[in-house]
Image (tube, rainbow, N blue to C red; front, side):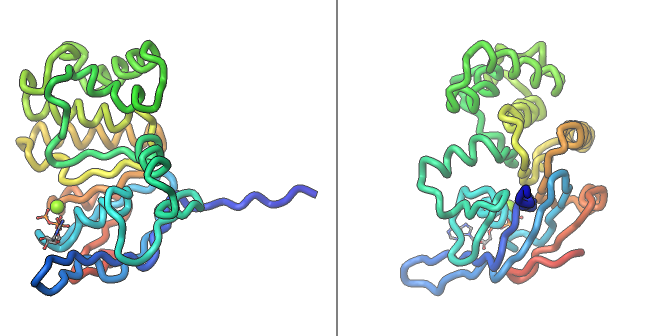
Amino acid sequence: MNKPVAVHPLLVAKGLRKAFTKRGSAPIDVLQGIDITVQPGDRIAIVGKSGAGKSTLLHVLGTLEKPTEGTVHFLGQDVFTYDEENLSKFRNQQVGFVFQFHYLMLEFTALENVMMPALIANHSKSQAKEKANHLLSRVGLSHRTDHKPSQLSGGEQQRVAIARSLMMSPKLLLTDEMTGNLDPITGAQVFELVQTIVSEFKQALISVTHDEAMAKTYDKVFRLTDGILKKS
Ligand SMILES: Nc1ncnc2c1ncn2[C@@H]1O[C@H](COP(=O)(O)OP(=O)(O)OP(=O)(O)O)[C@@H](O)[C@H]1O
Ligand SMILES: [Mg+2]
């Protein structure tokens, strides 16, 4: 008889706590026991006041920072038990990040920036180039592939960052104030674009945003207050 196959949620975070300690001052308890389950294709918005810990939570969920306590399971695997090498691999292949500031590499062109995650993963250069060109066309930048970040507008830079975040077809996309630096019209276009691509590829999306109207368009909205995450 075949054994039943265990079906895991995409991500399960349990009891996440994060304290920042600075010598000579009391620790700041930013996250104080957070549980969240994310299923494939979920679209989740996280809102909360400035300083509430939204970015910190996103960084812990994406394994950019270790929690002080608690666990993150991704498809059943306890990711913080991975060594540094496997953790980097995990981040490279399973999670896409789009930050408020794009963090593009200034000395490289748009195309090279988008190709980078695939080159890090040792994919062939020709395949990486093909996919990066495709993604840049999806974000409307086919005419800007050879431009360096300093030769691009803010919205264009953010669209390059979005293309880069999708390069490895991650199952989870994390965005932090993705449109915060853009004018309302460009912001709305970038937002629409991400929604379209994410639903097309059935990726889960967790977005930190100050924009309550934007948050309302997500399937679930959580509010982070006093270190605790509650459904809004
Ligand atoms: N590396 C760090 N060391 C010490 N304190 C930190 C560190 N990172 C964040 N903090 C503190 O943790 C708290 C939460 O910061 P975080 O950046 O997560 O807030 P946020 O909700 O994203 O705010 P914003 O909406 O302004 O971006 C803040 O009080 C901040 O000062
Ligand atoms: Mg923040």
